Amino acid sequence: MLDFYALFGLKENASPTDIKQGYHQFLLKVHPDKNQDQSDSEIINLAQQAYKTLKNPSTRKGYDIWLREQRLREERELISEEIHLEPEEKTLETDCRCGALFEIHAEDLANVVDYALFECSNCSLCFKVRMCNIKRSTEMNQNSNKVLLLGDTGVGKSTLVDTLCGKPDSRPESTVGVSIKVLAHQFAAGTPQESTEIIELWDVGGANIHRQTAARVFSDNVCGIIYVHDLTNSRSEQNLAQWAALLEEYPGPNGSQRFGEFNRLGDVEKIGYLPTLVVGSYLDLAPQRAREPNRQRIRFLRQYEEIQLDCRKEIAAGSTNKLLVSRFFDAVCVVKSRHSEIINQRRRRL
Image 1: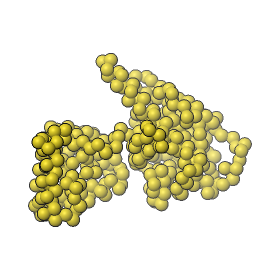
Image 2: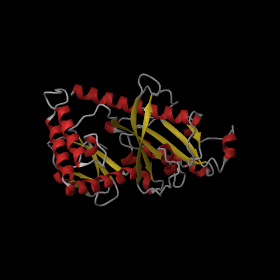
Image 3: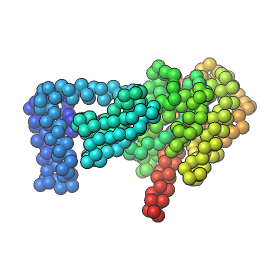
Image 4: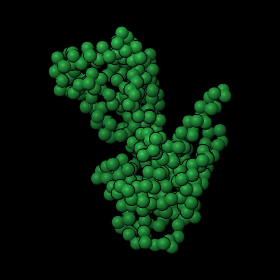
């Protein structure tokens, strides 16, 4: 998140003199006489708002408190939805997933440079509100790639999510409804097409009551699926067929097929096929499962790649498991890209 200090190239302990100098230097960069390409009245207005806030000790103190709250919300990673606002939009009203009305007023947006997180008053979810008044060449592609994690309660989905996000030592909590976390993935690493992509990991609660909700609500615009089962509990593997059956009952937009067979991770030529990865967790408690070459897998899972992990440990760099996870996320990004191409083609026809 870009804040008022970073806007002027300053640290939070900057002196009033540093703030004044940073403000003047920033104005020189965006002044029409100096740089016509970057000149933008909205950016200048933003800089004036930032300087007005930081030069006054009282308003600066309030801003510092607001900034600390923002960082705490980012650490929690409970983002429900991302909303883009144009500069002329001063208020926002929308429905949260908990059913409550979510409102943002002009005074709430005064401190926002590129984006900020606002909590719903009725639940713990946050809305990520992104302002369209400043562009940065280094900004990552914000088109998130949505991945569902499905499986029974207690199979280790939340632990797996934390590990994939680089936090293997985190203490997971029981998931009620859905928990959403994000990670940055290097798509096509080591090639000319390499780019940073945002992956959304939707950890769906494993209780029976959540299965219908997962099919009807959480599966919209999904780009990949991770099925998780407990290697010490064969029933959890068998129950994955129930998750798959529920998802197939609900077709995509306009009746299109949302889910289908996916032969292997290297082939994503058809937009109707979703990348799918199967993860067997608790390998530390059932190491013999990895050495069973004749283990009978559930029929519908045989078409997918499977990795077996101790989800509490970081996946070793260069390992086969790490390679398969990276290839899976690459395939997810390809599906998202092709979805976008189809949508753009339809818009051009209209």
